[in-house]
Length: 89
Image (cartoon, rainbow, N blue to C red; front, side, top):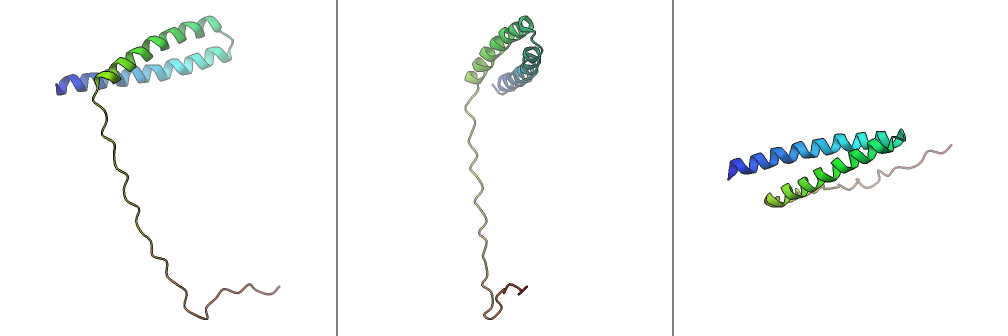
């Protein structure tokens, strides 16, 4: 079971990396007005997005991490008579 999870996570990582590269290629193709190339890339992106969704469905849900508690900071009071006074200009 553990080996299967690792294999699924590894494949998911590869799919996400490929999606990232294809997304960049799609953006570049669109900005260069190469619409046929962009359409082909979009179809490949769609296939990989479906595969990613299937892989995500087979993985157990991630355990949410609890945020660390903030560290309290104690602000001291100024001693009496030591106020900041603006200088006269």
